[in-house]
Length: 353
Image 1 (cartoon, helix red, strand yellow):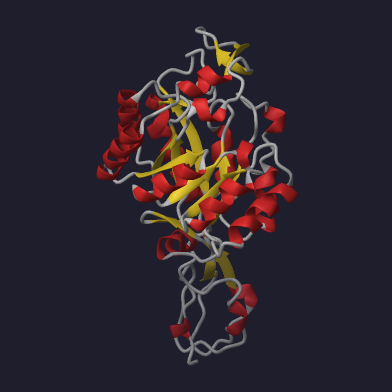
Image 2 (spheres, rainbow, N blue to C red):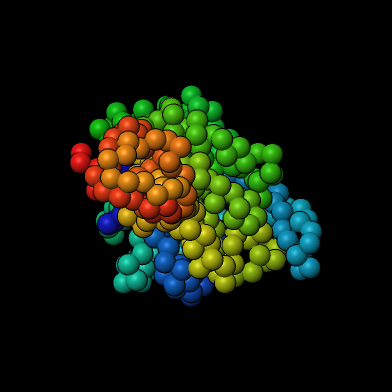
């Protein structure tokens, strides 16, 4: 179990729902609108990315390919754009990040960041974030992971395009710093991910291999797979928000629109209720309903006091408010202590036992 803010994450706790806005915002004001949408939907957290394109990208001409949804919402087309420009749009100043955190906190939303540099870790700890996210591309950036682990904050690691050995190595790096507050994200790669690369069964594999909460970071359009991930045991769901899926920029196509956020959260909560308990224990209401549709023993003839009860004197009918079919053997051969009548429910009070 890992704790973020007041929420516990792990088996036996409600699914923790994070809305990612780092790739899709268009500046501070849009972030505020996204936070308001997450609050109204009753999500648990908002996540951004602490991007510095100048520090991160060595070749400003490097191209990045992604899919975007056409205006008719029927076709996903591919395009390329400068990776530097893509990341440049995601930048927020530290002052803006602090303001956003305060806005989120006032609405009882947890707030955290994906970090890309070691000094980012110092900043998010300084402003009071409870958790740090490491991107899939940095799973082998051991120096960054080690610094994050030393912060004693919980560490969320994305694992897209990573082998199990690489995940083990990252987890071990964190544990060597005496930090066991780890959340492992199954993160299908692609923008958007292809359906044959979702591999939701990996959630079950990760739950068997690691004794930590397992999350699902969804890169596929819609949210059917998020619901399935919850059913498979995901403890945290992360989904990107957008105002319009047809914006021809990276990640909008695979996001959910702000008008869908309430439905998204409600579907996850309904799924949790539908999954129910692990133990087969009936509550009082279920027992009452069960007894109405089950059978109990009724006399099929009039019998005098002193008669020994025989099975042929009995019929089993609904409702099951009397002696049950699997209990009647206790009364067969017993002597009646009173006269009884046909169509009457057999009762323990009919016998001196």
